[in-house]
Length: 201
Image 1 (spheres, one colour):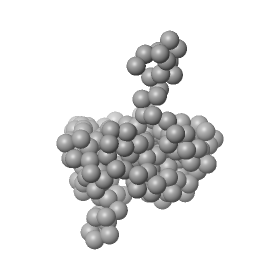
Image 2 (cartoon, rainbow, N blue to C red):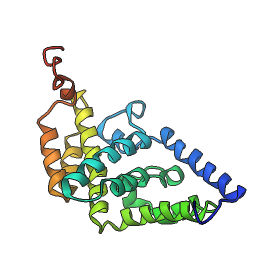
Image 3 (cartoon, rainbow, N blue to C red):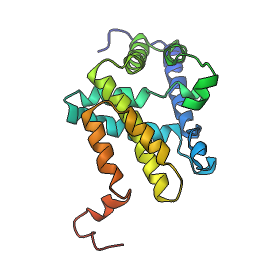
Image 4 (cartoon, rainbow, N blue to C red):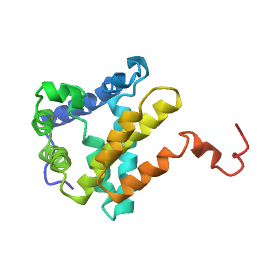
């Protein structure tokens, strides 16, 4: 049994946070138009967060970090973007935005203490970036961007610069090896690696 029984107000605040998290489905990743990808074809922040989480699990396992903790950091790393949008390196050069930790603190206001501390601690750990799990999560964030850039390049968009920048930002050996493997594959190659499917086009 939990030590604290949530009040009705805390339960409402938590439900509101969960609705807010769903808004990431409608939040586009704004950097892709710089690479010629039209807004109508760009991924959402929710889509980015999903594969970042899967990548984080794989990276943590490869690096000897905790996959579950890394997944938590990945899943929550862009939650603040419901309120401040997706800021790119270009926009951050000119516009100062709120610290994700401050946004998170506002987002979890009124939730049960255990909920607020779990979310805030994960965002803090990701932002500081010093634990093995945070390093894996931050690399997963960049690696998902690299993989998406490869997918966009495969259908004709000029994303080579993004691929190079994401590869250069990777810190862990496992992330670099996964980047290298991806750059010599076709994005749809996984389908042809299934038993009995290799001859199907």
